[in-house]
Image 1 (cartoon, rainbow, N blue to C red):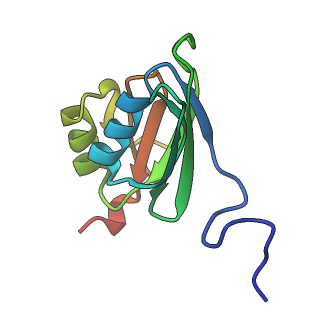
Image 2: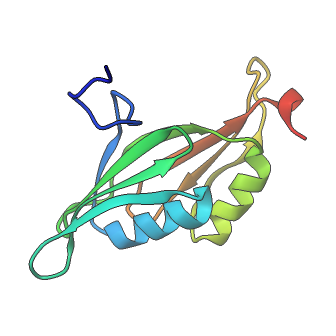
Length: 131
């Protein structure tokens, strides 16, 4: 019998980002990483209270807090093609933190992008796996 203590198809751990610009963050995640909105709960004034988005096999939770300062969180995301994802994230309004590069002792090609609420997203893929 499936576990009833968490939603089906949810991981046990999900990053929860509290954002001063939750709408910008949601739009960025959808445009940059093809995130799918799973659910959304708004306050009575229409502002975001809570949202959940799926990226591949993970769930990112977003909370809106207009008075929040930029978030200093970092999230790592493996993707099929780090260069293409980096380009898409920059086109979606992300700021460059690190161009795609492979460190000498690292197997991954990795790039960093900061999104509207200040979270830095590190995207990576194994160069031998790129098609």
